[in-house]
Image (cartoon, rainbow, N blue to C red):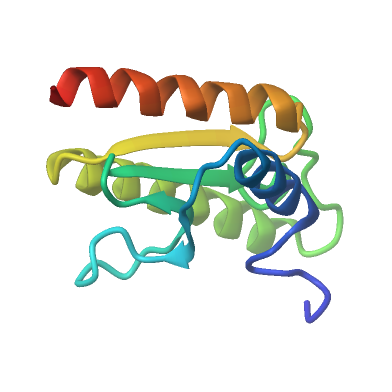
Length: 128
């Protein structure tokens, strides 16, 4: 389990690099709501945008998740709990006025960066 990174995964770093190259600045691995124990991969505080780059295995990607053969009950419960926690995180952030953007690690980093930029531009227009 030590080899599984909680933050700074390769897909996250690729997206961060693309956004940074386009002049965007953000917070990395912080709580959007300080009193709520959930950490987003990228946070754009002014726009109130929380970005999560979810791992296919850990978050149960419908395209790539394959159940474990060993200790199947444990892993089924673990992935199910992760999905429930993700849904709760989305709900709480939305209730507090945040925009939640989730993507999968297998998605094209350039497409992810483009969608984030689009959300930021839409949110800026809405706040004017």
